[in-house]
Length: 260
Image (tube, rainbow, N blue to C red; front, side):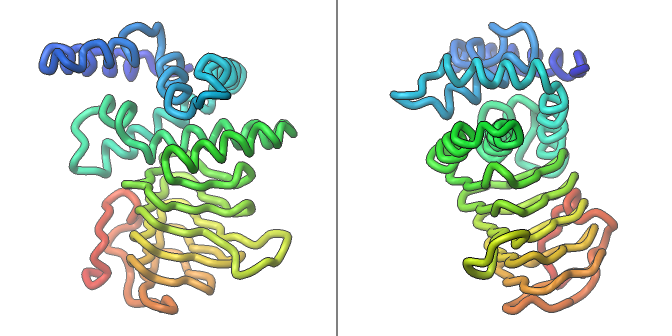
């Protein structure tokens, strides 16, 4: 069951924004205060973001509503994602900010819907949702890709994740990261990112390789081979340059590899 405390906190933050900035009051009321629970608010926000002139908001909202009703774990994952961003990003001071403003968070939630549709053999609709995700948020994730909970896409612009990629729980990924293949090969051909990993901006991780638990990938790196757990890699091609200063780099977000 979705935490009622979390929802109450969101509503408190929403009322504070309405009082502090009257120009946003109607927007915040429509997004948060007019809804009876978190999943209804989330469905409203996401469907309004990815609707277009042909596939209108109400049609998409019905798909989200059904998904959240039948698969409450998607809602629980969204809450974990919000908390991850809140805890890792020093620029964030409320849950509400993540929910209504952060496109990295929103793109992950849209992908969760596309992935659900893909697993239910509704592949055409899943591809449509993927396409809208790419157009609206500049984040391109194949519907088959698997993404865990407590994941943060920071800034998010330009993130590309291939069909057979796996991103486990508690991972942080910066902008312009590619989890791609090495050519036109078929089958299992994309990276597997284990829990606790942090991937710096602009990194390219290519092929069916594994980035081990608690590893750190430096900004701008090109990774073509497996990376062991709890090491830091950087460069083109990436090489081991140290060890992270903590067990879970995704949480501390210390991106200077010279510190390791």
